Length: 156
Image (cartoon, rainbow, N blue to C red; front, side, top):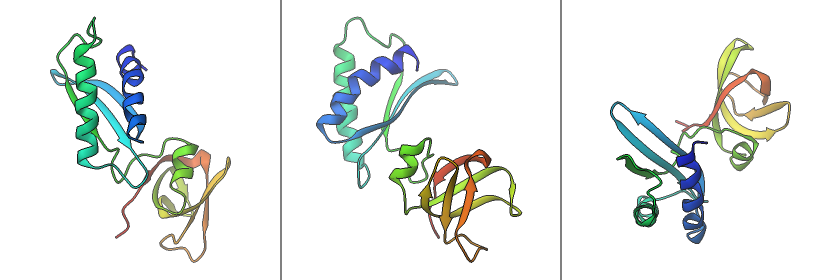
C-alpha cells in the first residue's frame, strides 16, 4: 500500500466500524491528469448510495481537518460499493459468497472451457467446486492453480 492509502485506511476504518460497514479496498490512482482516491465499502446485505454519502462526508471532513494535509495534491474522493460483479481476491471473499453465482476465468482450458459460471458450493486449498454449471450434469471441481480470476456474476 502507498503512504496515502495507508493513512486513509487508518482514518476510514473507525468511520466504517461506527456504521457496521467494512473496507473492501482503497486505491489512490492518477488517471489522465487527475488523481482519484477510491474507497470501496460494503456491509452484509449490500451498501446503499446513502451509506456511501455518509462515509464520504465524514471522511472528507476528517481529511480536511488534518495538518499537515495527508494528500497535498488535488484529488477526487469516490466512495462506492465494490459492485455486483466484484472480484473475489482471497479465501475470505470466496467463503463469504458460498452459495452465490460466480464467474471463473482460467489460465488454460479445462474440459474444453476457459470460463465457468455456477454456484460456488465448496472452497478448499486445492480447488473451487461449482454446481449448476452450464453444459455439466454434475458439480465441477476447478483446481485453484488454473484459476486466473474469480468474481461474482449475475445469473440471467
